[in-house]
Length: 338
Image (tube, rainbow, N blue to C red; front, side):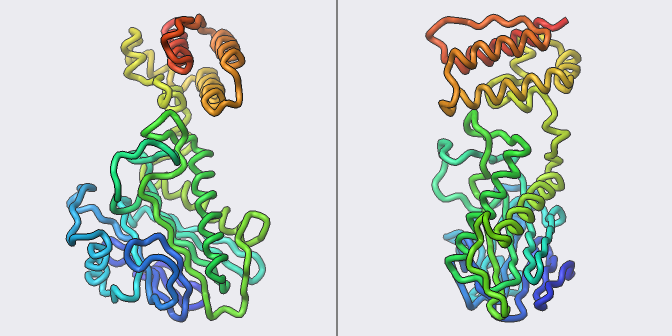
């Protein structure tokens, strides 16, 4: 089923568990795809495929390598594996977000599937495996202009910055450290430019209109796709334990401090406590980044708790890291609430 037509005749269509971009003319494609990836000028299509089988996300490869696995998927979709690139994901194609921006004679379109609840991470987090198959935030980016190869690489950088900005604005936690997520461990990008276009653009950074269009479309599409796939949105993030969970302030830890489920439910979304938790988390982040000193943060966190009506007394034992002691102080402050 075709659900989007581009002005140059290209189409986006849903076929089984995939979204396929079919090209009606010569395109320059840059992608992170394991099959058909890199810079290519001989492709006739690109796709994003939902790899789940019977609801399972941990489906085995159907070939010795991931590239060969994707080639099998391409054949099953009726595509020529020699002239196609493809990404895979556990996100549903029904939850794809499509956003478009136009400035004068140039249009940028982003088609995104996304989910970070199970493998969102921060660049530099400890890695647990070597060559993961698939992708979690998959971005297909279409530019109506002709872009040189080096410009397309810059477009990929701008799209990645926009993805990370979307996660930052949603304060998405890393699942592998106390940091904020910058993406997932298996993200993929496909950038498509129209070689037949009379319009050639050579810069895709944030100072150029093309970069602005890429940033805006990708940021909006990533947020929309995350909401469609998992319900991730500002309202879901309006929660004390969501804001501070990456530092150990969790519902489970609150239960260990003697709080009941009913009290935890009331505390979690109390406006003054969510605001306190947001400021507290920022202070801990800046301490971990080396932007604030330990004395700066310790004093500020004590004042935040007292202003929110909580008891605040920092454990001064030197054997525990300050970040751990600050997390414990917040939990004790919650337990002190009447």
